[in-house]
Length: 175
Image (cartoon, rainbow, N blue to C red; front, top):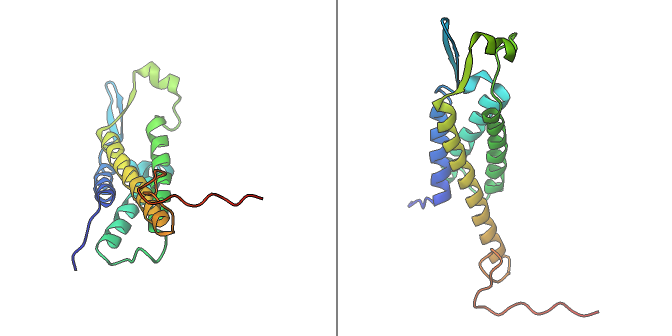
């Protein structure tokens, strides 16, 4: 059985693999002069770290199962489900990227007084690349599946609104 891997599938699987690795790298670093530093990864925050990590990995695994024929794509609307998972994971991840974490029990003013600095780590930026790849692949696959669905449903054109060389449909009836 020869398997055809589409570009959106490659993007989703590669992005999920990148995000898998990024989850274990440093997402944030707290540096306090004369005391030291502490690094944290995706697993410090469940809703905006661990959950997006799990969702992106799920998108990659489900895509691989469909591509390699283990899971049949006609069992459920795979591209819609994967797009939903990817969008949810991306929104949660962007929240984590936008919100700089503080230190529990210490105000931002106290951190400033002692010269402490919270910085984004390499894992967060690598994770952003993986997240963008998964999201792009999910959107492309969704648009591609809609293109096929609208073309096979009796419409004319390529499914994206442009006309093809076939004749247009008749005008609507007048009342």
